[in-house]
Every structure is written in C-alpha cells, then in structure tokens.
Length: 200
Image 1 (cartoon, rainbow, N blue to C red):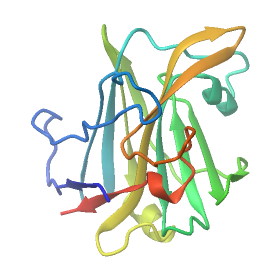
Image 2: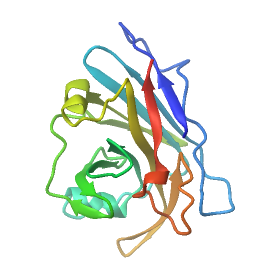
Image 3: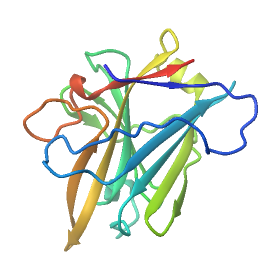
Image 4: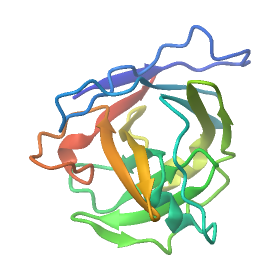
C-alpha cells in the first residue's frame, strides 16, 4: 500500500520544499496524465492540504451553483475510510471554484449526499497560467470523531477528475488516481484504490 508521510509544524511559512505525492497516473489510459501534486502537513489542530492540478483552463459547470454541479466539473477528490470494509467511507469532491460535494457512503456506492462534512474545510483556490491550486484543512478532532485516525495513520484515497471538454453541460472526464485500483473500468469506490497518510 502506498504511504505518504507528513510532518508536524509548529509554524507554517510556505509550501516550498514540502514533499509531495507526485505519482498520480491514468490507470485506465495509455497516455501520461497531466501533472498533479498533493501536499500536506499538520499542527495541533488540523491537517492542512494542497493540490496543484496542471493543465489548460479547467472546465467548471455552473448553473444553479449547487454542490451536485461538481460532478460535471474538473475536480480533485479525497476519500477517507476506517478499514477495507468501507462501512462507511467519506467523500470530498472539490472543484476549482471551491465548491465541495461532500457525502457519506457505504460500499458499494450507497451514497448519502444529504450528509455534510461536520466542520469548515476552509477551501481556498487560485487559478494560475498552467494550473490551479486548491487547499484546505481537516480538523483533527473531526477526523478522530469519525474514527479515521488510527495509530497515526489515515486510510485515504487521492484522485482527480480531469475535465477535458464540456458539451451541453456534460463533462468529458479523464480519471486520475494516486493508487491504481486494478479495476477494469475507472472506479475509485473500491478498497484497492486507497493509500495511507502517515502522521510522523
């Protein structure tokens, strides 16, 4: 299982020099995936994270501006689970506008989209010439209440839906993952798509 170790900081200065998850890929395509990076650190209160998603100007679908529109947009995603049973697991899909599709689920694909993450994720986004950034935080107390931290490790899935075009509000998405789930078709909602975030 892939492991990404993060460090505790007493004071944050900037993201420069942080180690990154940089081995995202297109498990279901033969081409190289656009560069995607994930970084994180933690303090006494929260785990702070950042995605850098490279490529052309991202396609974002906006009609009523509700959270379900994230499904039709470029986005980065984080899944959490307690164990391989995924009963339950938690999903955060976040687009370049800072909108969050948050929901709770049970394996296999039993979604409760009325569920909301218990506290503020403090999402911030920025668009650059060749990429966008998305950053936020998870309160450690919330992760503990959801039983997601065990022996200083969190079972986590890291993904990206790279939207290459949009036709009549329908997104053409290429699926990028940190871990190759080994499934025949794109699927993040399976036990084999997770890695470990280790709090050193």
